Length: 245
Image (cartoon, rainbow, N blue to C red):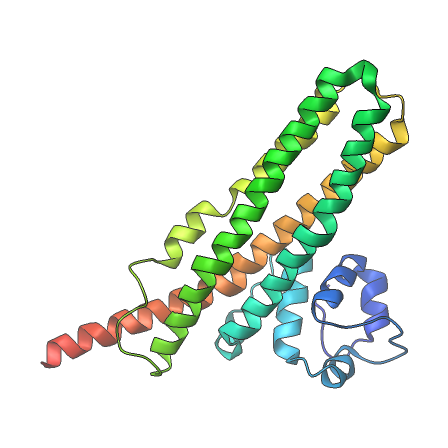
């Protein structure tokens, strides 16, 4: 289902419940009544095209907002991605970690295996934090610099020798490592005393994995194509200037 502006937001959530998490990142609160998606965006001062691109990419693996990419500023994209990072590091990760710690002290008979799960999780948590810090300290400033050059608000030199191609190659490791953690729990953790707790941990890991996959897809289909197109335009302009000198 392609989400459009004339649909009622409540109907959209009923059909695609996973976008409830996206609404929070846009500052959209529940209590939506019968407002359409467009009406909610107008009330919350959200750019409709950008909201539709994000929720459709989030929900549909095949969706690609090619025609509307040019309308999105880097600040819009970065603001959304930073809010996603905040959710991972300050809401989702602490909640999962608390459950894993409970699993540790409630299952002393499986101490070796549970400690292994906890150790793997702490390593993953550190890598997730490192990854989000890298995006916010390196990738996002580069994106803003490229946009400034593209719009003529800066010199014709890119802000660094960095390229968005570098990021594109590197940013898929997190989902794979989360899969490894789930595999340890599913295959190698002996049945714990608190089966419900273990199931809850697994369920939350699946939810985090899906959210990260959707997050990466937004980067792949919104952020990276936008930056690549600007890089190409800047390169063509530089080449043309050299030829005319």
